[in-house]
Image 1 (cartoon, rainbow, N blue to C red):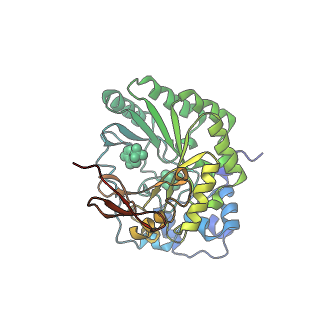
Image 2 (cartoon, rainbow, N blue to C red):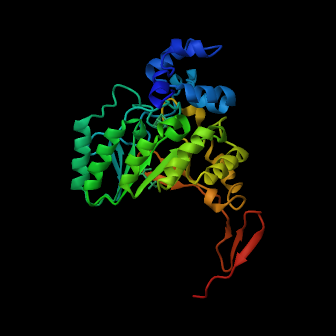
Image 3 (cartoon, helix red, strand yellow):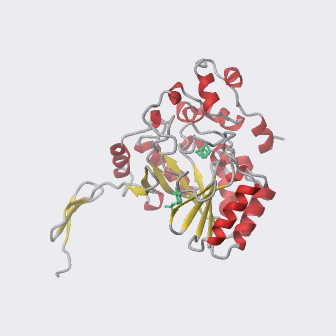
Length: 347
Ligand SMILES: *Cc1c(COP(=O)(O)O)cnc(C)c1O
Ligand code: SF4
């Protein structure tokens, strides 16, 4: 039987593996892979081959990764914002806790490309313990976001232990897990995993789908199992050049997600991460796409388009401008570009 562990063990992880699977592989990719690890599991590889460039480009390395002279190693200033290893405390009431160093696929555009999947990313019981201690000593933290790497790549027992420990810290009201598992290795969502997760409500999961072709029968089933366990599901999408940077693709993606009970949460402007410059789009493009979504599809299917400001300054919503004039009456345009007005209350 193709369990998730078997599939994972059959992943493409080396230059030679890649050569076996693709007709043409640029020799330069040997260096790229030495710098930034690859992992393409058979589920995603088969899907990507059927789908085409939109999925392949997310998984297959590119020589451009080593030629990027614009972007920086740690654009969100995460290391500077970490009071203990693997815990980023940027906002007053929530903390990002990295609990896994591995993923079921290494996305070429990953924000944490500097360390995810590399030996330099050390997560063990000592670092976890340092994280718990910090969370206990910082009662202002009301919400913990588990990420990595992919937290759902941990063994059920390990995840259970982490969630149990966090649950003991009474000042933590909500746990949120960020995972790409439902889109890259959906068979990891097993009944056993779900029975672990559902013990720790209020628990939220944010998935990461970038393209409608990622929504397969398997992915649908994975989301259904999570939603049936009472886990509210959100989704992050990264706006990526030549992958999903058009309104029709994103409209399809967001409407399909909503029908799976997954609420599109953020559409991210690509971060300034070293090795990913070839995926970046102009912010104008994303704002224009938002204009073609807002009002045209269910508000429930429209995410916030956000830019995570360099240097750890936080997420900034980028919204089309609807206001034409702020005098009284307020003059604005609607989603159809019609001029409208609203008389303000008199002072
Ligand atoms: C994105 C992020 C959060 C969560 O932000 P929300 O707007 O609440 O989703 C928290 N901490 C860090 C470090 C983040 O990057
Ligand atoms: S799943 Fe997330 S953390 Fe892992 S490589 Fe992809 S973007 Fe990075």
